[in-house]
Image (cartoon, rainbow, N blue to C red; front, side, top):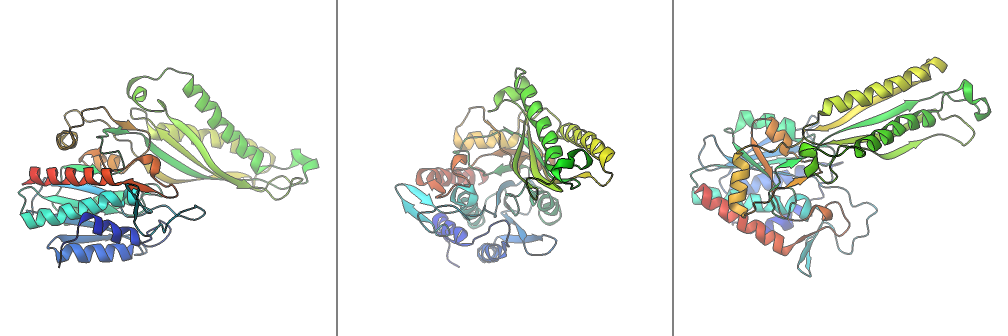
Length: 385
């Protein structure tokens, strides 16, 4: 089978509309076929309904100590966005590669795939692995089962490079996060009889107001330690969507909203969750004193550990050697790097593109960044040789 260039691989990857709400199997089928045709050993880890799969690949000697290149196959939707070109076709213009996922993060995946093929062809002395997850965009939920599966099918790697867009800078720390779907169940009465009912919206507002007050308290304190390195330099609590109610003159029977918390390294995600749940239970108790049927249901839908800077970390040392970047880099968004770190890998974030382009209409990856990624992979291959 003929080898493809990184750009040709990118064209194929973007052509698969792997939005998180759908399957990624067409992409995995093609990619597994291409890699195995180049002599790279591949393994799948399926999700529960077998509509999605993670792809794990190993090139080079069958031994421990691999460098792991980590990416995700899923992308966010294009619904409602005004694109000036087909989002599922890579379009090059003005020094940019336009297409859904070019930046986040099929550009890196294309570079990683070519590096694996080259590693196999050149006969590197240190192995190289690819870990391609699903469902990253809905809360990094696909990586933990994939990482567990890796331990059973390939020799354990040691350094993981997560290729989220960092403009090829070396990111050694990021915030962790957790999220809850909140369903406030009230009791309907005519609004003129307000004290005899329970408004799900007004009670939900009490919980949202607690989030606002907590944010204000956090911001009033001077940042310390690791937090001071972030922008913003503190933990943030946020509600991004809300719905509920039937009419203006009926106490709302239901109110639903989503809460996310982005927690700086050094602070405990479980502690923040406990504080949030405790406040919800206080409000619920007051609601049930009026109507026992009232309730607040909390459904935790994601939890992502932060990436902790490592003292003398192997992944950081390798990435700095390959990029020449000696700056201190931390970001406020979450990635799968913290999950690899929790599993015993040394981990950093380093990939082409700018996070500001992720999820945008007319998402793009600068050609110069793609080429910088190609140079990074060439230096990596030389180091593995």
